[in-house]
Image (cartoon, rainbow, N blue to C red):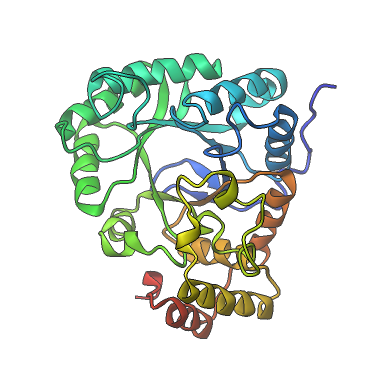
Length: 337
């Protein structure tokens, strides 16, 4: 049966401009980092994309190495794009990235012109697309002159294979150098992409949040739930279907210290007092920062996407609530300063 998108998909979703650009992104975007590899169920992938789009989530975020294995997420997304979403291409923001290891040899990772442009060509082929909306340099590459990497991003736009470019996992100092070059080239830079959550405040410390705020640049934040830590999932043990059990590459059992679990329990109690789940409060906390353009979520089933979108029903925090959260995690909400 041909997919017919919900006619009311734009009625309740919030959209925010990416810095000083004319591009708007939904408050919540869907990342395909996990659960879109070849081990995933195609029907579940399709239902997650449909659920997201029907809720007004117009932005799907990928990278060349998302899987597993590398490239699998783009391949699976490409098949679903052709089967279900091709009529809606002009309503979608599709992004991909290059920077991490993708294929063997000296040209399969990094920030060289050869790697970045070759990778973009491969990504477009896997997804069956003529262009992506945003093409990111996925990481800082100190072994490559930043001018070379930025010229490659510029070429991606000028060749018609990307509409905008972005930087992922950069700090404030490197981001400032890179965006200055892109500005001189008149390349349409649109977005920083970095991790940010109640527990992970690195962009407050490394200058990236200050840069985005000062220069009025877009910012999309991934891992807002800290890979599931900012949910009630681990408060009563480790579920067998959890990421720790299924894929221990990034989140390990040793991360669940008694001190951390105590903080999560206090945050969970506070979320209940707000009438939210801990996950919903954590997402709302990130989006409350006016510098943030969009919050990037992952999901393993459609119901999670529905629950995450409900976080937008209450994104307001009193000063007392912000202070309580900072006291619990020993952090500081920078948008107050």
